[in-house]
Length: 153
Image (cartoon, rainbow, N blue to C red; front, side, top):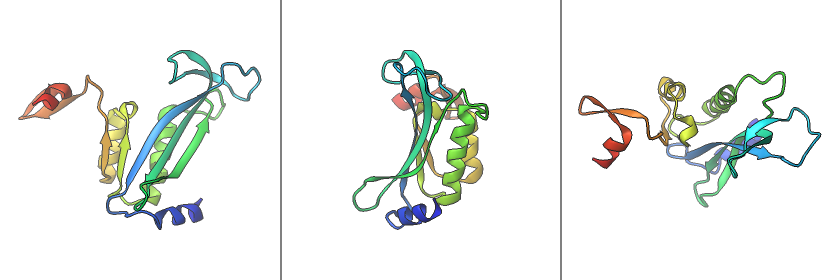
């Protein structure tokens, strides 16, 4: 993996590279006998079905703006060693912290709008963008306000 990541780093500018981090799922509603199956929410349909959860990250290359995989893991929630989706997410973030500059901008969707992730990035002085949930508050002119109200200003 280290050799692979060394090759990836040759194709990025660490001063401003963008790293995309995303959770997803692999839904297998018709399968009956796969190891450590668990109930998941199928992101495509919104229905509860059998399958696996995933975490992936990719860094955008400098020249072609192509995503180069930097981390990926499929994890079954029914596995005995499974701790939590948050734990798996933090394993991904730790790998990125170990292998990429804090200047690389980590971009994440609403699923990462939680104080634990904000603390993670702030403690390490890593650049990040998290798409906030509509109920998130922000400090604006010394007052706590809903982020939607702040955005409208």
